[in-house]
Image (cartoon, rainbow, N blue to C red; front, side, top):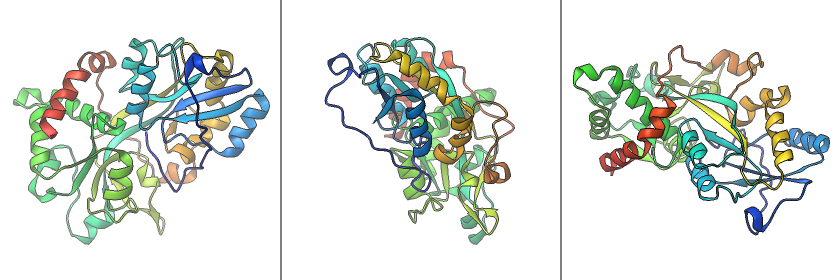
Length: 327
């Protein structure tokens, strides 16, 4: 997932001397293994600790892809007790490796979309793109940045979106590989992470970037508000649904506390806090959204999807082909 400096409440991240069975957590300690974008209000964490009698320790491991890699490498001898942040693009890899003790639980969702800087396009008197096909047109040359599919969960989601799109029009002798070659020929920039793409290279990200088109999230219009208007738009029919999961880790020293933590993530207080803390939608239906989200965040009517079984079967081959094309 992603790190938003303006919305993240910093948590102390203890350094663990060792992992798994070599340094087990005590019954009163719960070790959470997550991604760098984990952030919930300190008061909410303190309330959980008080009510549960547990002390939460957080071990962050990069993006969702890096987190999944670490969980797979330590399966059965985990870094902690519970994990949060593996998404549906990586879930099959984690479950097939035996990462979890039982089935993981969906906690939040969001959609990875192509977003654009409304102010930039208005200032340059250029109409923004309206589809994936538009992004290969010469008028958008050198304007787009995305994350790498092999290093970033939104990057992987965008790759899957292009695969789903190509499958939709495959009768036209079209392939996702052809599409990516066209994107690169049109000046597409590929960054390692969402932080680099959005916060640094995107013109609305705060880093004085020069790319007004970015692969990011459908919630971003609620992120940049000026004079009662959103400065970020979402390109229709470019969105891929992303779901984040939490689960008890196989071999956890404190499985009881881990199960309590997963249950707590679905509580009304946590679900309400997710949009403002981690810029994702709550998974529990009926959870109220912040006012800015209700007004500005865009939940697309149509979302591109690829079946999980198909992702699991083809992920390695797709990534190899993508790497060959983009390098």
